[in-house]
Image (cartoon, rainbow, N blue to C red; front, side, top):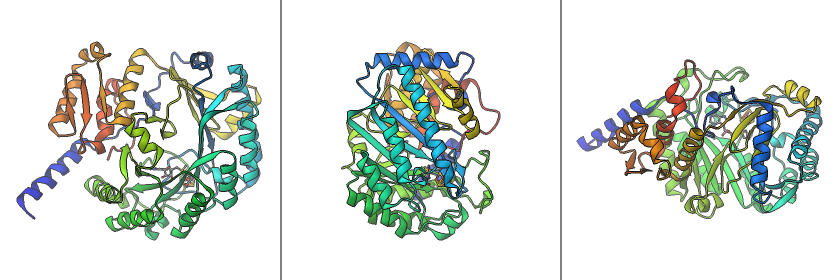
Length: 464
Ligand SMILES: C[S@@+](CC[C@H](N)C(=O)[O-])C[C@H]1O[C@@H](n2cnc3c(N)ncnc32)[C@H](O)[C@@H]1O
Ligand code: SF4
């Protein structure tokens, strides 16, 4: 190895050591552990919800996230809110509860809302029968109408998505689907308790394309237990052969404090960390670039023909609790157990325990159990974090006064500029190519709530 190459790797290693710290993924600002519940109440959630709905004049449309929590089998890496069962009798009561929750929201809003986006997430939406999914969507539109340019999407598990699921959801207006792939190596799959052969993924991808879905996504994870460079290469090559339109290339979030993941087939020492993990990312990213996938935001890649790439180019990309989306709505209502809603001025989260969720609905009350009212400062920081996550840059012309008061932020940004992660101008920053993997760290420089109170217990996964 030449001296220059040795220097290059030494520099990378020291950057990783410097920036690999626990940090949020910023699907919201403030992040959930930093919500301040002192000013939040059930009534002010309803008030801000109505305020945003009235402001939008019911024209822009709202986004609906519907959490469908059941899975037949437990993946031991999974950080989602899920309930494992093989008993499909749970489907009907759950759909009824979600529709009841929706009817309560529509009563509060007072007129039939226009829906711009629906995302079915989980758990596993394809756990449910086609009949129940149809009843769910028809039930939603009993109280609502569709926006002209609506976008409906869902998460499908390749092991249980059927042709009938894809066809029925297509007929109901769904055009986007994402499939959980994770990794194709048998050793990794065994460790995470998710045995899923390539042909299962190929089959559902072909079906979706044949039926007419315009955006097919695959989720891949780097940093899984026992995962090696050859596994990432093999997984991406197999993925490329199926040509999904977009790819989530997630960093494995090791969050063992989330309960209920059962007996793991791996030990902490089996998880690649630091440089080893970063190398998996670098190799994956290089290959994705080679195969014409463009990085459009944290963990996300898309072909130039995909609407997410177009939104990134037009600076219209948005990020919320559902991940990235091609358009922004001011109001997002999360239905189902553990779902989070966002009225722009406040957040609210539903009960995380299924039995409590059912019980509160029985009392004709929204099953909200906590939330946060955004302060003026939160709204400014939220804007910068969204800009960084969606455009890799931000500027503070309008909030200059606010930022002058916080030299601490500027000092940190200058340090990052020295490390080559960003370029800093008088009132703006731009994340460099080298800085893109560190975008969470750059956002953390703006996160005043995190700065004021360092967590005492583990709240976030590592940034690398
Ligand atoms: C709700 S699951 C997808 C739908 C379906 N349940 C499945 O597994 O195919 C959403 C995605 O979250 C990602 N995910 C879950 N836990 C994760 C973790 N701990 N770290 C990184 N990504 C994770 C996986 O890539 C997974 O495909
Ligand atoms: S990865 Fe998907 S199928 Fe596996 S436990 Fe999580 S939500 Fe369920």
